[in-house]
Image 1 (cartoon, rainbow, N blue to C red):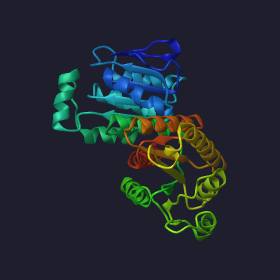
Image 2 (cartoon, rainbow, N blue to C red):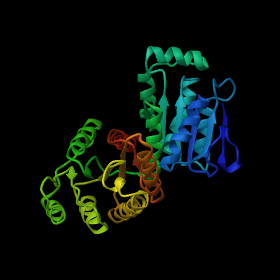
Image 3 (cartoon, one colour):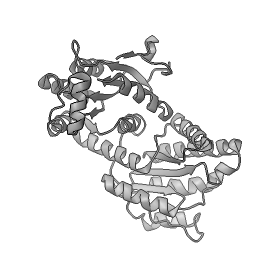
Image 4 (cartoon, rainbow, N blue to C red):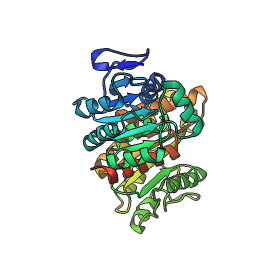
Length: 338
């Protein structure tokens, strides 16, 4: 329990970044608050204020939602809640916050076991999840079901900001990965439409080798140099029937991973810069999924590429499923907001 306010040089745990950001958090758990901060670091997400208030014996969640709604340093609000204290006032506070800023909430006690644990932890009565979901819907907030998903939404609100529609182009190497990506996007409620003939014609000029697909998902390995990389991604991003592009790659075992760390860093730095340029030119979100194994080399490469991406203004995700659900939640939030 405690406060993390980077601008005031105040931390609740060791290793918390000294640089302030624009995400404010309300949490009934100090550990979950600390882990949110840690999970957010490699994604480029930084916090304005993190408030862990425990069982709310004095100030309650509604007080902190009110505060963050008014706080000029906070642009995004996330929360971890175990129970509902003074339901009407909390609903009013979340509505106030949701009318001004993006809000995502992780509510525990979804199951009987979770409800018992919440009562043991902070003496909270979890209440009906359906009622809480209705509250979020009316208030313009998004409810998520894991701490990782809460970080994903903070990332999405910060970097993606807005999505025009559900149509996504998926670009990367690997036929099986592309098939699974299509499944993940469809399961999340997004669409993977076939590219228009003129878009496919543009792609055919740079992805003519056997074994590739240019319908969508785009499965190609013809992106080894800056020119072909751009020539593949830009037609997808500017296609009139596409609202966003997901670029996916694996690290730790492919050609880039086997040519030495300096070459890998140079390659992915150019990729991050190229993706950021395409995002700016097209006016559509370009997000990056970085698949990795848990070998030391793969983790180091993923962290390096991730940092280059967020410093270039790109959202990153560790899996296609998480990216898909975050983008789908962004669309739902856009429908809900007042």
